Image 1 (tube, helix red, strand yellow):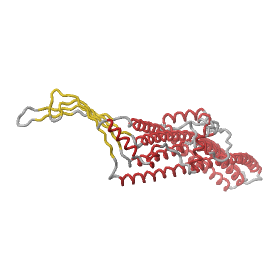
Image 2: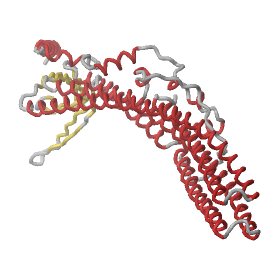
Image 3: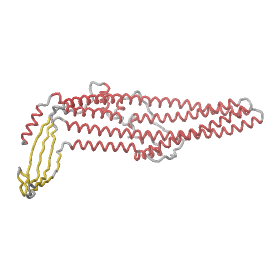
Image 4: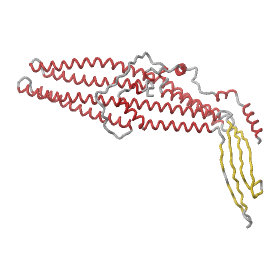
Length: 459
């Protein structure tokens, strides 16, 4: 077949292309009949506000030098992030392969043989051919494969950012959890020392006839209760340190984090959850690219219904020309074109297209759910932050009043105008309030961190 005939064949194939296949060449666009998707598209087209909470760099939020150093180490060493980066490299290699598929393939296949009949001299034949094959992308098979590969590459980039955000939030949460446990241990150990003194005081008062044996037993029991709670806190501290070690990708060790560490967050004033902030989340971008990928896979399934045109050429050096062996050999070249149309595989192609359409709808459903779930996460994180901010003020007042209560009841007990039960109740209440306040401060810090992560922070 001459090159002119091959070209004519290609034009004939194009003329046979039905109008319904035109959208095979189109780029992916979000469905216009979906209100949620359209709102998302409009949000992605809006200018980015770098001052919003989710767009702050992590260095602007986490200003504690020790925490910043730990986050940097985790981003350098974390296994999950390294694997996510490798997934980006894999997707990039696949994208490169998809782009190179437009180029002809070349193969060198040298061969030789010898034959002898009835004792005759062996006749040696040989060929040193190079085969070139080029698929003409008339119906967008290679085009959609390339676009799908690009969508997968961008999806992996978004996943990498999501993992990065999780690691930053994970290190910060561990950091402040360890600080909170250390703070609780300090309070509990100080309280244990006071209770040990209280037990001795009860024994002295019993000898003086001011309290009975029940007061001594009650105070002793409370002392052992505090010691038992300290063992629980020490176990929690080991667990938190191990979690930090895993994030840092090192063997379990103890991290020297000061108990005074507290997160000082910038002012966060929000009304509702703007779509433009959700659109900045890496998991949402990944879900969008998943829809795009499914769209191009569906287009590939549609393209399978149409013929494929391949131009091939063979050329090289041989001594086998026709039915004669010629020495020395000579050069040869062959050109060919083939048009392959699916006839008997139509049933399989229909099934493939139906499956692709269903998977595309699944991807769209997952995208919509991801948007709604993201909105819920942001709303909840903001509510937790606000409520713990309010609760922390109330607990501070409670601790202040209970400290006065303990002081007053101890004085009254010494004077004989209060019972040991009143002292016991006041001291128990104070310890509980102090622990609650520490937990509330931790919950507030974690809510800020979770809000930052839920808005796609971590750049």
